[in-house]
Length: 88
Image 1 (spheres, rainbow, N blue to C red):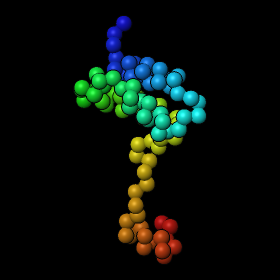
Image 2 (image 1 turned 120 degrees about the vertical axis):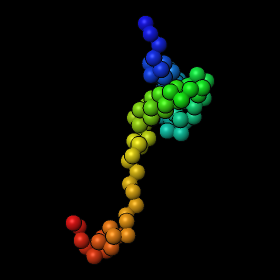
Image 3 (image 1 turned 90 degrees about the horizontal axis):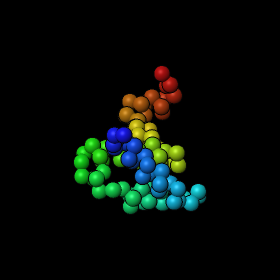
Image 4 (image 1 turned 180 degrees about the horizontal axis):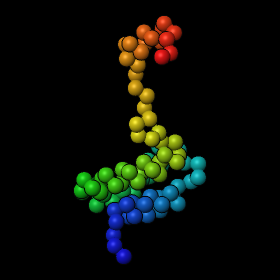
């Protein structure tokens, strides 16, 4: 059996999940994951990337907004169109 970073991250996150109470909030879950993260996931860029992806996937189940879901502010033209009632 070969080692994969994503399998290791998933196992660690699953272990952390089992230790948390069912009503733990998002901040408590983030804190627990940060404390449980092994140093090998900090020592390489690939390890950091894999850990962050696994962590995001887990936390999205508990209220973390997906990446790219932030709404961009309206441009000056869009604001003007909105004020004038244009919807095109």
